[in-house]
Amino acid sequence: MKNLVSTFMLVALVALNTITVFSGTWKQKDWQDSYSNGNLIANKENKWERIEDNWYYFDEKGYTSIGWKLIESKWYYFSHDGVMQTGWLNSSLGWYYLGENGAMHIGWIFDQQKWYYLDVNGLLQTGWTEVNNEWYYFNESGVMQVGWVFKDGHWFYINQQGQMQRGWINVDSKWYYLNNNGYMMTAWVYLDSHWYYFNPDGSMAQSWMNLGAWYYFETNGTMVSGWKKIDGRWYHFENAGDKIGSMTFGWLQENDVWYFLNDKGIMVTEWLDWNGEWYYFNDTGVMMTGWIGYKGKLYYLYSSGAMAYNTVINGYILDETGAWVGTKSNS
Image 1: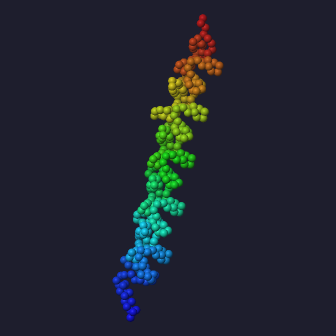
Image 2: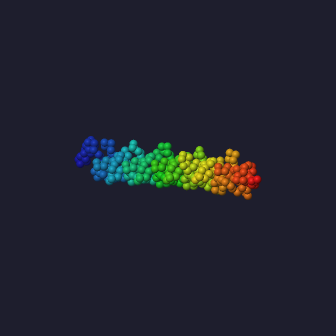
Image 3: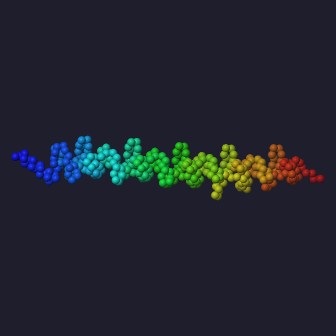
C-alpha cells in the first residue's frame, strides 16, 4: 500500500510540470535544465556544480544558468545547455574573453603571443583605443599593433609597448617626425626655429637635396642658410625671403663686399672671367679693387672689380694681360 501511494504521488508531480528527481539525470522545464544527484533540487540553489567535467551554476530556482550571469561581482557566460564557457566568446555585440575560471576578463590579456585589450564592458577593442592617456591601435582581429601603421591616409608609428608615438623617433637609423596627432610628416616642417625636410617615406633629409633648388641639411636635419663650408669648399645659401635655404649662384653682396658663386655654387677665389671682364677674389672670396700683386706682377682693378688692361693707370702702363709693364714717360 505504501509503494502504491508513493507511485501515485510521483505521477501527480509530473502531471503538474514540476521537476522530477532522478539520481544523476537531467530534466527540462520551461526550456531550462535542472539536475539531480539524488538530493533535492532546492539544495542546489545559487550553487556551482561540476558535472561530467563541465561547470554549471544553478540559480535561485534550481535551474542551470543560461547566457550572461553576474555571480559575486563577476560576469560569466553559460551556453544554451548551461555549460560555463571559457576562452574567446563571440556574441552579437562583439568578442569577449573568459578566463580559465570562466570570469569575463577586462583590460589587457596576452594570448598566443599577442596582446589584446577589453574595455570596461569586456568587449574586445579594435581600431584606435585610448588607455591611460596613451593611444593604441588594434587590427580587425583585436591584435595590438607595433611598428608602422597606415590608417585614414596617414602613417603612424607604434612602439614595442603598443603606444602611438609623437615627435622625433629613430627607426632603422633614420629619423622621422610625428605631429601631435601622430601623423608622420613629409615635405617641409618648421620646428623650434629651424626648417627640416622629410622625404616621401618620412625619413629626415640630410646633406644635399635637390628640391627644385639645391639645399643642404646638417646631420641633425636642420636646413643651412648663409655660408657653409662643405668638403673644403664654401657655399652660400639664401638666408631670407621665399628662397631661404636655396643655394646661391652668381654675384652676392654682403656688408658692402662682393662675392661670386659659380655654376656649382662654389665660392670663387682667384681670377674669374665674367662677361668678357676679369675679376679677382682673394682667399676669403672677397672681390678685390685697386692695385693687387699676383705671382710677381701688378694688376689694377677698377671700383667695379673689372681688371684694367691695354691702358695707363696713374702713369703705369698695363699690357693686354692687365700686367704692369712699365712707366709712362713724362717727356
